[in-house]
Length: 205
Image (tube, rainbow, N blue to C red; front, top):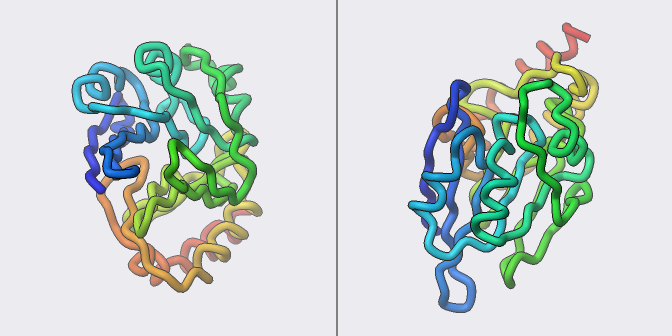
């Protein structure tokens, strides 16, 4: 697996091009193409097969529609966040896009012969998910290095965030985490401070 990273826009949202081997052929998955991501993605992907969204916030999906049109590839989005792609609920002027595949909760999807796992961790948004490829998590705005996603936005839920953190805390395997903002980390490193964040969220709701 090869991973290219480029922070995009004012919020420096990480856009990823993940190159994986499928039947001896290098194929690219585009994860969270944010504001003005299209030029970089087109210049740095050779054989793209899908756009994957960790969640529906505008800074992660801004270039969905443009890239779908340019590259002729489908969009995979958590079902509970699909309305954010179409309706621009935060009034940011986000170009509308429509998911071709709505991911249901914890689901393994077949993309060009590759099995890609979505793990549903709602709280930051209703559909907030991580995308698991091998031993790597693209954690979107659920987990960051020594931090977690905000749970005080419209459509966020502190109760769901607590349940999601408890769910993540129980996972025995380790993963390298590539978050939606900032530097990479590991699940084990974040589990060491997860009880602190659970308490912080519980105290706020």
